[in-house]
Length: 84
Image (cartoon, rainbow, N blue to C red; front, side):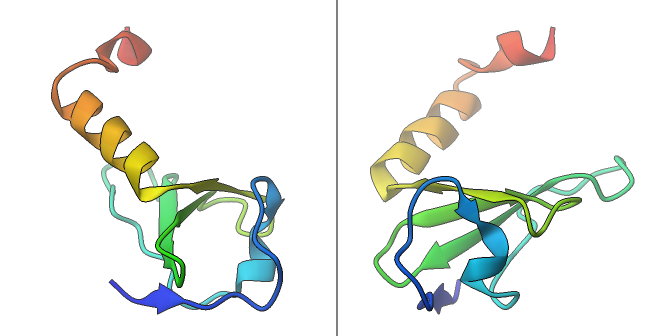
């Protein structure tokens, strides 16, 4: 995955547009009409996440450890309560 060097100081909740339009990926896609999350690997290793239907909205910024814990927990079924 490409690592993007942002033009500004990166902080949680910043406008996603400030991270640029290149480098965003839709790692999760399905039959939801294109409404999904997009993720970008930043130059410092952190991960930015935004809502695909609101590309100018806020970007949530996660460390690699935070994203690893989330993905591993989701795979283990720890987030299944969100679907019920």
